[in-house]
Length: 485
Image (cartoon, rainbow, N blue to C red; front, side, top):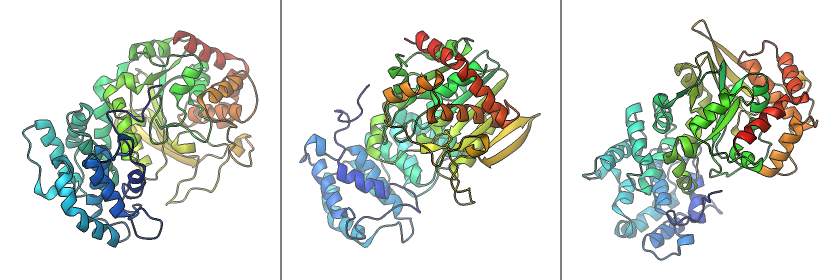
């Protein structure tokens, strides 16, 4: 696996500054000021670390990277417009006033611009001018339109501006709670509608899971795809090998543990999906969007997940002429509305979002507290079906107990690793009963039921169990691994 941390391109990151970023690089209601109470990171200490790094006084491993500086100062500037609870504390105001002269002497001009955007930034480079104009709005708490967002991000993806501005743009739009236009811009900057490859299958379902993987619960998507393939329902999986900040277990890691190279081309993935003996495929972001993949290390240095953490899950890579579906996981309330609007406007025949385990679309084996207007429960499901051009919406908290899955709590695996997940998933597809088997069956069944591919939930469960118990699902998984060795 290609290592993310410790690269020459991104020295550091400095852990103390990362802790400060974790507090301030968030939205108008969640940011936590520095130095407000005992035990908080001290703002004067953070600023001195930045000054020492800018002067070259710290070793590379301890240095505050320019990406960290970009995220930190963008957050500080945006927080000037926040309310009393999340805006600057008295300690931050004092520290910034005391360090102003030092900062202005040692910081690069592009970093100083983030702290004082009101003065503008002069550059003869068109790409830099594009991003400077966008940052001028973002740092004032304003939103960009679709064209501004997409054009600025294409500059970022083409590596035509420095790390400080890349980080500032990404964290700034997250802090401003990105608009729907910005969500669309982030999606299409990576891979737009013109890049979608046509396939010849009866139906096709894209699964959008968090790229940063799983650290607590079994990741069943790959095995769910094999079950659905055995039922004649093709699936697309996509992601990366490892993604900060969580760096959990991903489908790509599981595939490699199973003996797959997990790095084929889009055309190879298309062939696997269209092959009736396989019926699904995984495609790595490093293949379909190398520019976005290259920014993984930057994401470690900005600490908080950028807007791409939402939109990359909704990437459409293929389309078939008959029935196109998408299933996306979410965590933060409010994003489900934007995601469903996106899927509807992109023409999907059915789309659904699930608040699953670890922000995925994976159903837990136990339903907890029911959803409220302010808080969505784990297993909350929303979506639509397109019926004769009209939209029919659905929403429900899925209770596995009503389908025969009786668990006092959602169990965790004994070991969290790609090898352990691969072994457990194969054993379940070979018929070994237990919570891994039940997770795979439940998730395959609920997807097909809510998308309208099966009219009754209990029947969907029975169909999924049948193709697992017969060995057909395992055969499809083995055929894919054999094809991708």
